[in-house]
Image (cartoon, rainbow, N blue to C red; front, side):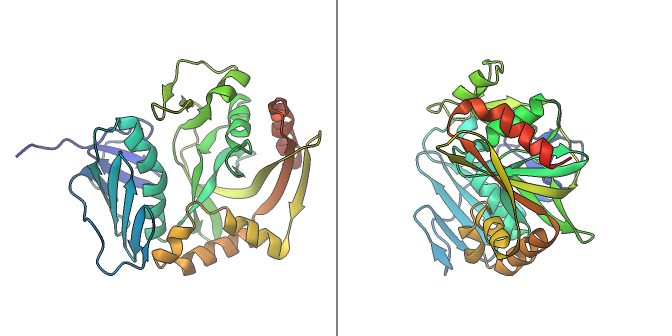
Length: 299
């Protein structure tokens, strides 16, 4: 029998005991933990699943995720993730899906919300920057970080209600960036790829805020075919709808029977957090204008 070796990390306010190396996370010295991550065999299928998707099966407190030619994940009770390799995946490939979709399911199981957006600290408040893939949220986040504003989370931000405040919990001290963004922002090109076949890289950030923080604002970035950056505040029913639509892997919530928790948190967000929609030109040279527009509305 092989003795397994584990390391303890902290992410999203949770202590994680992991068999695999997660250098993106904050390493800590503890023996008690909230989440266990280890290699092992996962079930071929769930018994009486609520939902059977193309690459996942789900029911309350159980979730199976299948990633073609990489691995399978079994997420259980918001406290355990078992990983079974398929083929010979690289560690970076496993971590990409572990820290993305697998953790998204785990967050739902714990009654919290994974929001699709990166978070920075501005004026001692958390600002979430969101948008569809290609809208420029990671580029805007990186620009703000380069201007000196600490990052709290990249791409997925864990949201929960703490003492009647809508708060975000710290994620990873890195930003995933495409090669053209790295060139545009003149960031060192000596970075690790997040997946061998993708020109997308992990940009480690020293300026990291590792405490839960109240959210003041969400900015949704969109692109347009005209010049100039436009920003407007949304309120009412449309505000709730947009916030709800930007939940990360929101299709998981219904399958995991956590829709009530989702509705409660999004409702609190809609009541307490400001929401802006920012439209920027399709051209990439608007990044500084986007960052400065965000800063202007926060004054």
